[in-house]
Structures are given as structure tokens and as C-alpha cells.
Length: 482
Ligand SMILES: Cc1ncc(COP(=O)(O)O)c(C=O)c1O
Image (cartoon, rainbow, N blue to C red; front, top):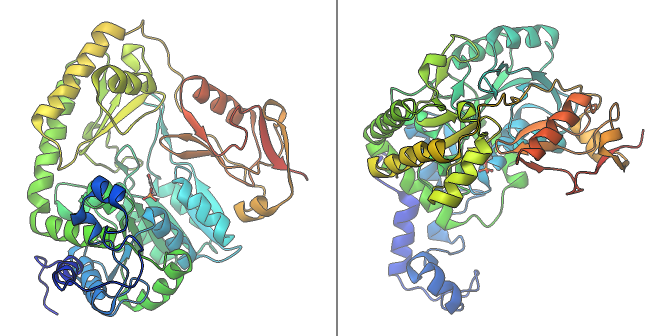
């Protein structure tokens, strides 16, 4: 097979399939939209004609031998991976597969605390034991950082039996650990490195951006093509460095992956890969320039701090993804959630998230100078109209987890509800996150501390969306009966 990135084998096979005008007596029952006029007028015939089931000429996602395998190989070359799996159950499925591939029940994984909920859920599924590394906190900004290499080294020394190290590349805020050093260190201790690159797809397509997992020779990476790569929501790539692992990883992926992979999603991955492979360098040069321009302009407005590469400290902030427009709002007296709400409600501007101290606007290849200027203007206006006396905002502190049981043991144990405020010292049966950015405050199996309770109550009072608690009023929490 020749390495021609200008091909999109799945999309091409779908177009050919439609041109044959085959009569379908297979699922899906909407029969290319003919059976559901409401859906047809909503999505259009063009989209629905591609929503088909796997057929001989369209290959099969769970055991590809034709156009899907061809597309996977093209994607692997574009990302310089040994193999690339097309994922249609979100990056969460890729994260689960990575964890299941490196650790079994009662085996350890070293991971930063600021992992996404999908990583904690993967621990519940596998029974693996988390060894958390404090990612460090920038107390002025109230954001968690990358892992320090020396903290990873210490965790490896204390847990030489760990099977793998898990790394975020980058964090939601764009912060990168020293990935290359962590990979070298882990490999020297015969540990695998698995990387959550949900927010790092673009690293593979532009030299000015931080190092990617595959370039650092990490073993596996979960890449959210749908976040910054231009494919449809829920479509991702799972990359592996060594193609000899392809069959084993495919078997693990198929434990949870659907048997009815959507062709709209796989074709979107195929087309997005082609687009980035052919144009990524240029596209992300523009995105970087646009975000740099926005940062510069926002930093001219009193009260905001749009942070960037000046934060780099050679360790917990080894590199920074400049396409992320992260802005600390503390100097306006408004917290990030308030600014997020004002942007949406008063200015019709939707940003990625607001937390207690910051907002994050994702700048992508779909943006323009005019749109970015609208955001800058709105932030300026918000400062003039809504700013309060600068108050000392409580920042997001690191909650030291005390792991008493594995997430799987706690998830499966007998639980009961007790008053949340009286739960200090008990073992949590629930997984609590302040969302976004979806970082766990408590995971199943962890001792509930007064720090965790205070943080959750404070975050809720300031507008954070708290997920994971069965009781929406947050009066009660499920704890283990023991
Ligand atoms: C860091 C990180 N990892 C994994 C995921 C899971 O991705 P998905 O929503 O595609 O399942 C997300 C989603 O926001 C994320 O932020």
C-alpha cells in the first residue's frame, strides 16, 4: 500500500457504495433516511445515506481487513505510530483500552491526580491500583500543572512493581510535563507509558507545538481527534507505538467498543486525518498566531491574565500549548464561572469552560480574527460593566487523596447514604468531580477529608457543576458500610 495521505479509503468506499444504488435489507432501519422523514429533514439525505451498516466493501470496525484497515494504516503513518485504531465511543473508550492493556486487577499504575474521569472509570473496570502523583498547583492561577520528573521518579522508586505511568499531554489548560524524560525513566524501569492526548491532537501536525506521545516513544496514546482535529464528536484515535501489539490491543478494545461502528464517525476520522496530514502545519500556524494575538490583546485589559509560555519552568510546566487561550479572571473580582456565564448570556459567546479562577477559550482551525476580536471586545466590556472590587478568590487546592481501597473494590462494596457534612473519615463510594474541568476530588475507595468537603461545597457555591453524587442536593453522600 502506498503512503498517500491524500486518500480517505473509508469515505471513498462510502461514496462508491452510494453510487451503486444498492437496495438495503439490512440495518439501520431508516434505510438511508427513507424510513424517517423527520430525521431526513433534520440531518439531510447526504448525511443519512452514509449511515450504513458494515458490508463486505465497507469492512468491519471490530475486525478490519479492507478499507478500515487501510485507513488505520494511513492514520498510523500520519501520527508516526505503529498502529492507529479508529474509536467511535469517545476518547473515554481509548483511555479504558490503554489502562486495560497495561494493568490487570491489583496491578499498579502511576498517574497524576488530574486525570480525566474516564481514567478513574477505567480503574473501576480493571481493578488496577492508582498510585497518584501530585501534579502541583500554581496557587496564583489555581490550576493543576504537569507531573514533576522527580515526583515520578519517587513514585517509581516507591512502587517498582507498577506496570505503567499515565501522563496527560497536555492538561486541559495546555500544560505539558517533561514527557520525553518520563518515557525514558519509565522504560528504564520496564514500565509502559500511556498518554491521554485528548487535548493534544494538533501536536502531531505542527513543529511549534509541544512534543507528542508518539514522538516521545510512549507506548500508547488516546487522541481526541474530535476536539482539535476536526472530526465529528465522539470520534478518536487510539495510537500504539509497536505494531506487534495490534492484535492484542484490538482484542481488548473490542471488549467495550461497539459492534456497530458508525460510518459517519469513522469517515469523519478518515477525512480529518487526510485534511490535517495535508494542511496541518499551515492550519496550526494560523491557530497559534490567532491565539497569540488574543493573548496579547487580553493582557492589555486590566484584570485579566492570559497566560502562556512565560509560565514554563523546565519541570511541572515543561511546555505549553499556545493554542489554548486560558485566562485568569481574578483581577476583575469575577470568578471564571461568572465570566463564562456572562459571555454566554450577554454576548452570545460560548467558551470551553470557566472554573473558579479561569476561563478557557479553545481556538481552532474553525476560528477567524473577527471572531476572536468579538471575544476580546466582550471581555473588555465585562471588565467595564461587571467588575467587582478585586476579591481574594480561593483557588483550586490540591486535595491529597488517601486511597484506602481500589476504585473497583469500593465501587462493588456495600454502601449507604450519610450526611455529606458528617462524612469525614469515611470511605467514599462515589466519584466526585468539579466539572469542568472534570478533575476528581474524591474517587471510590478514598477517605473523605474535611479538605475535600470544603472544596466541593465552595466549588458548588461558586457555580461549579458537581457530578458523581447520587444526591443532587448534595446533602448526602454514599460511603462504604465498613
Ligand atoms: C483529558 C480528557 N481525557 C479524556 C476525555 C474523554 O473524551 P471523550 O469525551 O471523547 O470520551 C476527555 C473529555 O473531555 C478529557 O478532557
